[in-house]
Length: 331
Image (tube, rainbow, N blue to C red; front, side):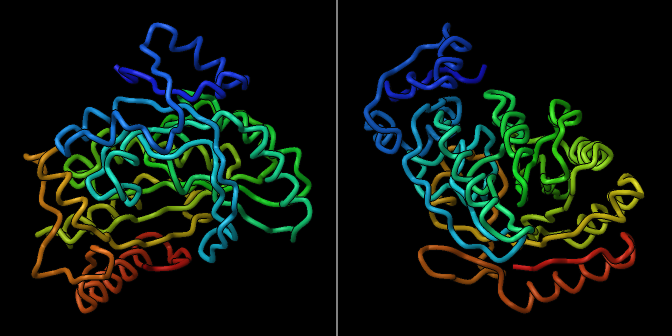
């Protein structure tokens, strides 16, 4: 059952969403904390506790509201209503420190965040785009808070601007009938099903993700695909060819006409390795010394010749099988 316990800042109960969550999870143990960023009880946990900590939920008030310039799909990365996730992807880039980033943190001062979004959007260029899902998965969060439904409804009042978010989940039914005014862009993250099962624990199957993307597009949302992260497993060519073929078979003609693609190659770190060895001892090993090189700050990335081979392979397949949609960037 999720969550198994809730850590909360008392001030969070002064907000409507905080009171809603207090009532919704009234039968779950609630533990008072001073600061969602520093929970001493959790900081002393060992790596092997990582999976269990994913069952905890943290509720607090977001204090950081600084927008970070971005030059990929969006103009700004926006600190928004959640951070972390209840899923357990072995490579998750949010896992910079297991006892801070493993669990889902919810921030209840959404009205404050929305006011800044609307003010910035309406004072900027027509096509200013805000990434609101860089720190969490908002489709998953929406099943707990309803925040994504609320956000789409509120942002539809904006005269200008767009919101975007990525997801690995298929629970989009509550979004389909919303009056989004064409200002919302959902990007579905995909990988071969075998990699999803082995490395993206707790996320939706590939078939369900494709179906969700089709339904969102049919409901008038702008849509994109992230092939992310590309992982060079032993039979990577066969697996990614199968992925592109499945996309070609199952995406609707409308999606194929409208989508764009992002390609992201996996980065890994010594923190991931340490956690995964103890928390998921039977999981696949993502680090391969023969394929990877250091990137600084304890991170590893694929060596350039292999990465270039992978990029060329994927670009050719995408052009051949999906009608040559734009590939916005490859990193």
